[in-house]
Amino acid sequence: MSPFKTPVATSADSRDHRGAWCNHLPFGIIPDIMDIVILLGAPGSGKGTVAAALAGRGGSFNHVSTGELLRAAVAKGTPAGVEAKSYMDSGSLVPDAVVAQMVKDVVDAASGDAATMLLDGFPRNLAQAEILEKMGAPVKKAVLIDVPDGIIQDRIAGRRTCPKCKAGYHVKNLPPKVEGVCDKCGAQLTVRKDDNPETVRDRLAVYHRETEPLVAFYENKGLLARIDGTRGVEATCKAFVEAAGLK
Ligand code: AMP
Image 1 (cartoon, rainbow, N blue to C red):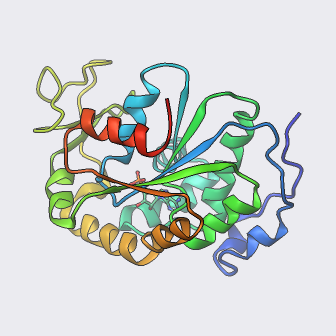
Image 2 (tube, protein in one colour; image 1 turned 60 degrees about the vertical axis):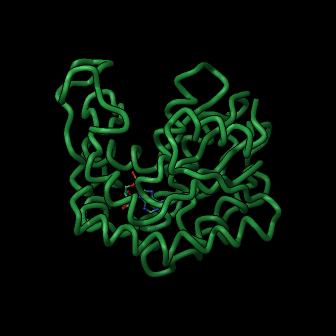
């Protein structure tokens, strides 16, 4: 039975009452749930790469990326996807209620699951962090993957994604075996629409303005850990597992 019995906020009210929606959620609505580890970091800092690498290693990690959920919703043309598209294309944040509902649905589906949920891309601002708290989500750690902005720009310029199985690559740091072709499913790799230099600049500005305050938020709760994200995928994964206190 679903642990969520609350009325669902509509996206229409979220834009005018940003953050206020969480006030309607009862406390403690996520019983018996797995640990949650939040991945914090700028776009291109490696959150998705680390989470996907760990989730690919077996059953103990469950990777939940709000960016992926939103891109899937856009591709399917769901009402949430239709609403999210223009925000995503311009590099701004999708309204909190739209994203929070998606997170609520996946957390609900994973209720009782023993795997650690690696939450990649949520929360993205203080209002979302408060929504997560009001859900009663058992946040074990928030790990900041620290990468300077200059490196981010280069990284994103080389980023390639498989449109079919969503595997991520980088032309220099994580190249596919055959140029332009996904190792896992053979599809032609693509560049994300919001990975162009102008939108990346906007996304970085949004990160510093909206998301960076979460570093202090989780630090004040004694939940923050920082790792150096400028090294290779293996080293970053290892540092992440240690920082998050995972096995
Ligand atoms: P990402 O794949 O995490 O870089 O996310 C891509 C885009 O999806 C972002 O630039 C936002 O437009 C949107 N997005 C992802 N997660 C969130 C979130 N938690 N809140 C608002 N918008 C989000």
